[in-house]
Length: 69
Image 1 (tube, rainbow, N blue to C red):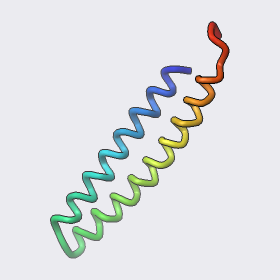
Image 2: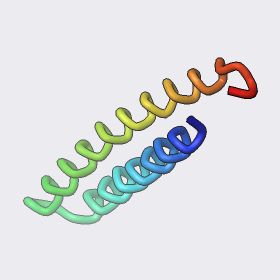
Image 3: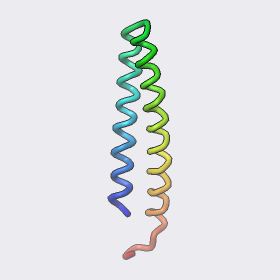
Image 4: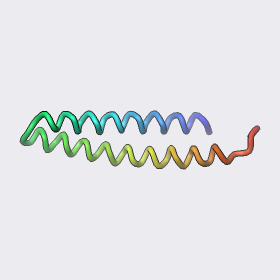
């Protein structure tokens, strides 16, 4: 179970970094490029939210498991 939490935590970090990157790049441009980057930022924010929720659920399950399996 622990590796699953780590995988989802890592995925959440990647998605968060991507959404922040696209958001910063959108601020530095305009026109269709800005629109595309803003769309990508929102898309990655949805992925970030999904992975964070799943990570939180797995963490709760792991925290409530009896020690020793």
